[in-house]
Length: 144
Image 1 (cartoon, rainbow, N blue to C red):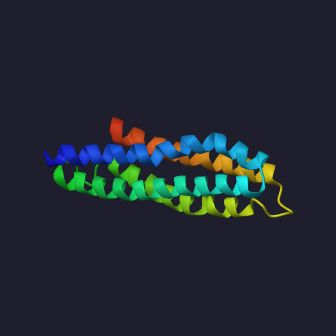
Image 2 (image 1 turned 30 degrees about the horizontal axis):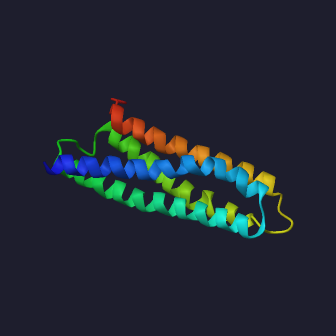
């Protein structure tokens, strides 16, 4: 019963970790096409979505650790080790990918179209990292 509740929490936190990034894709164009207060509102929404995903990621990690303890899975499972490796990479990427780019909007000498392009690329890279981890958790492949 506990494992089922943990699994539900884990899946819900995955949805909350990935979902906001799909909403941010069309927002990047709005960041590029607006300025002033409207642009700042979009930036604040962007930051809030990233913050939500980060906190959901904390729940995701904790629930994943508890699932390993509550189920017969072990740390030596290839899909768990690979997921942890990608998780470490994604945490590093998340820390560096969005905040520095968002700070560039509104600065006079900044090419906002180029910054928006980099931001869009960062979103897609992060989504791919998250989807790779999701695939590993669902498929549980035997990698070695």
